[in-house]
Image (cartoon, rainbow, N blue to C red; front, top):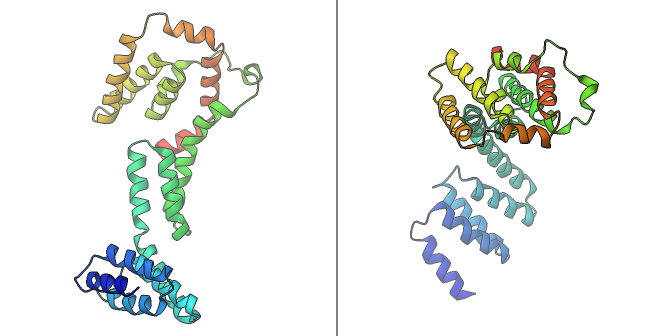
Length: 248
């Protein structure tokens, strides 16, 4: 034990990083040396006052020693630091949304809202992300027969291509409708030629179309009868929600 003490003391006396301090003091705490942990935590928190790990380690040590009020004070400081850093969740949610990683964007915003549940803009952002995800989930979850909600004669694939968005294009692609996805991305770029991500994706899809055999679409339709019609119908049922996202 004395050798460990000397080893730890040498490390702690040579300006270690906050991460190294935490590892050493966590080891000391596991050995039951709570007084030493508290002493060193207080010392190094003067150097690293915003290190949540050290702050929480100090709070846990106080709690195990029976100093509940002091433990509560340190935990409150740790929580305040975490709350101050929660904006990173929101920023990452914005980035994921721009990359059309809607599920991950929604998850990040839920984490942000756990810290700031009253943020109206954040709640609205989450609602929009969840609305985007609903059509994708519906494509796989709706079990009713196709004829139960068959489209009317004037409802067609063209109607959805006219309502062009990258989300619609990717839904077409996910169902094997590469040509429809290409048409949709072309429509997107006709109204927004600066959309580099859509341009990149369009080039990828056109490459796939060239490589695919001419009868690939026919084989897919034989293997999944009614799949295309069903997809279009489900998408049309969710168009009002998608409209809110596009123009909201």
